[in-house]
Amino acid sequence: MKHVLEFEKPIVELQHKLDELRKHSTTHSMDISFEEEIQKIEQKLAETRRQVFENLSPWQRVQLARHPRRPYTLDYLARAFEGFEELHGDRLYAEDRAVVGGFATLGGHRVMAIGTQKGRDTKENIRRNFGSAHPEGYRKALRLMRLAAKFNLPIVTLIDTAGAYPGIGAEERHIAEAIAVNLREMMLLEVPIVAAVLGEGGSGGALGIGVADRVLILENAYYSVISPEGCAAILWKDRANAPRAAEALRITARDLFDLKLADEIVPEPLGGAHNDPASAAASLKSSLLNNLEAVLAAPVPERLKQRYAKYRAFGHFLEPQPAAA
Image 1 (tube, rainbow, N blue to C red):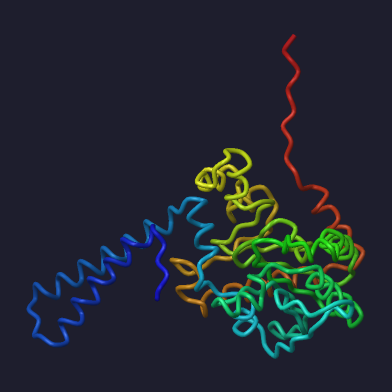
Image 2 (tube, rainbow, N blue to C red):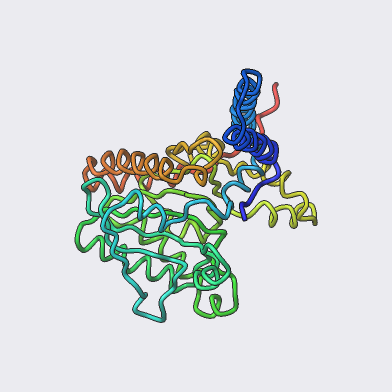
């Protein structure tokens, strides 16, 4: 069954009406007025779609980022990359299928591609743990990143997770330490790193593979220290205030770009990446390549210096001005 978001309903209703008219036209002879009616609905549909998707609220973009038909990491690895060869295991505890990674080719560049992966149905979501990685997922990612450094391969990370798994087992195996080590090691790796937020970029779970020379974000993705629902539950004691929290958190691609937390916004097809996955993948591939080649052009010492300066510059502070004399 097609998943329809609340703000998409006017579009769906117009599309249904248009489909009915076109179906009717194939079985009945049409007069000029009938053709004019179809043209009017087509124009209204195009205008409605444009108005809806060009004026989305932060909460509506969060809903699009979570859309169950939105392309996930493996979809982009199949469409934007070539020859992906998956590698498994952290060599310490287990294989975490919420994190996928391996060798791939991106526009002629041999790379190590790593990303978080959600499931399409209940069975796969259980297998992928809903895209929320355990410590072994981050340790697998680090193992692959060190392997990339050994062979002097650039690293591309694809982020789409609500956050790291907060369960008892994850805490027992030191999830915070696993993420912290990744943050430290990614800052020091000499090979180029480019990260892209595909959908959800949730807290440390996203940042655990998100330290990079360039951070890209898809137009309808979000990146945040906490989910809007979690923020609403803390500040207003009611998750129903999630739309209000989404606006206050400034988590959309445009907000993050303006705050210099993201380096580039990757455009999506009108209506979201799920409406045209091939176009979304082509757009992501182009942005990844442009940024990867720019980072590759910098000498290693300069690249590390720029990466450090990039993260040191994060944060905006308001200080009280001295009173006028």
